[in-house]
Amino acid sequence: MKKKIAVLPGDGIGKEVANGAIEVLKAIGQYYKHDFEFEFGLIGGEAIDKCGTPLPEETIELCRSSDAVLLGAVGGPKWDKNLPELRPEKGLLGIRKELDLFANIRPVQTYKALQEISPLKGEKIEDVDLVIVRELTSGLYFGKPSERIVSDGEEAAVDTLFYKRKEIERILETAFQMAQKRRGKVTSVDKANVLTTSKLWREIAEELASKYPDVTLEHMLVDNAAMQLIRMPSQFDVIVTENMFGDILSDEASMITGSLGMLPSASLSNSGLHLYEPVHGSAPDIAGQNLANPVGMILSGALMLRYSFDLHEEARAIEKAVKHVLDSGKCTRDLTNNEGAFIHTTEMVEEIKEVLANDYALLNIIDSYE
Ligand SMILES: NC(=O)C1=CN([C@@H]2O[C@H](COP(=O)(O)OP(=O)(O)OC[C@H]3O[C@@H](n4cnc5c(N)ncnc54)[C@H](O)[C@@H]3O)[C@@H](O)[C@H]2O)C=CC1
Ligand SMILES: CC(C)CC(=O)C(=O)O
Ligand SMILES: [Mg+2]
Image 1 (cartoon, helix red, strand yellow):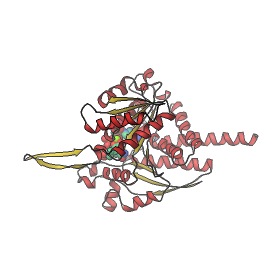
Image 2 (image 1 turned 180 degrees about the horizontal axis):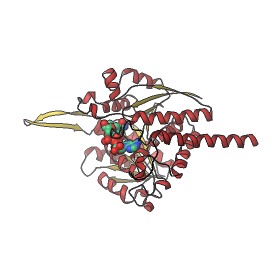
Image 3 (image 1 turned 60 degrees about the horizontal axis):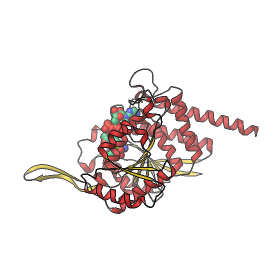
Image 4 (image 1 turned 90 degrees about the horizontal axis):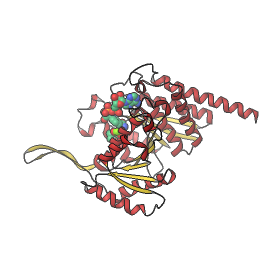
């Protein structure tokens, strides 16, 4: 199978983890006989430096002409004082909007091997298998006006939380459909005791629920949800929520697994062209030191195989390899609470590739006996 994959490594550790994911995908291509072709594009701070814009037109064209997009992360202190339109993050928000990637799927699964690393007690995280469905192309990060103003002669600023019915409907539909394939429960997280957008969100959730009688819908206020994620994370199946709420809750949820570096994500559109990115940012504090955990990015590659290319066995092979390496006690520095031995980014990638190679060799031996 020939597939063109656009790779936008971005800034900081984005480059390091993207390299890792490409290596793992190349190994999958070799063992399972798929022709993955990788083409690189600029985004974020590097694109500002080289092209004067965080999202060059060529990058958008590259993505549009590809079968899927892999993105590392953007941002860094170098660009923090730039004007809003010239911030790396604008590139990320821009590509999400351009490709209409409205549904950001962020699965949170725990690993037995990491139970002691999670700040939560082992028994609390044993049965955690939840997914955050975050609305990604509207809400507080996109509403207008969003600007500095003068109000009553005083310096002020405004951001806008705006949602259209259709935007709410399509993300809720995604969540209901995902719950149908999972454990049949949707927790819709909002702030309906205060926000008008949340009241509309709740109304629409109630309307749609009747279309999905096999799914149980519950509503939860976002402040409570933040607490419940720590108190009893296993109560959740599918969490669906507004853009910024989902952004914050998913970083929080990552710590259930033990590190922000563990979480992958898929940003889906209705066009069939999807983008895959880890949940974390460019981590300037560890960038360039070979310390980043590449697992979130590598697992995003697995999500790409599953959602974009229907390659379920190949996706499972990557997920199994990650588990195998963690089970063997090998982990990057973030998974050690900064105590004890750890392996570097490139070594973690090598370990995962080695498991894939061994699995492949084993399959070949079995085949030769059949
Ligand atoms: N999707 C994206 O491109 C995102 C970009 N950002 C940008 O990244 C920059 C840094 O933002 P922060 O708030 O520091 O968030 P961050 O996610 O980059 O880092 C937060 C903390 O987690 C650690 N961390 C993150 N990913 C890790 C990994 N794979 N392995 C080991 N440790 C990891 C970092 O070292 C840091 O201590 C900012 O410019 C921000 O705007 C932030 C979040 C998402
Ligand atoms: C630019 C930000 C919205 C990126 C981020 O934190 C995220 O998507 O998780
Ligand atoms: Mg975030």
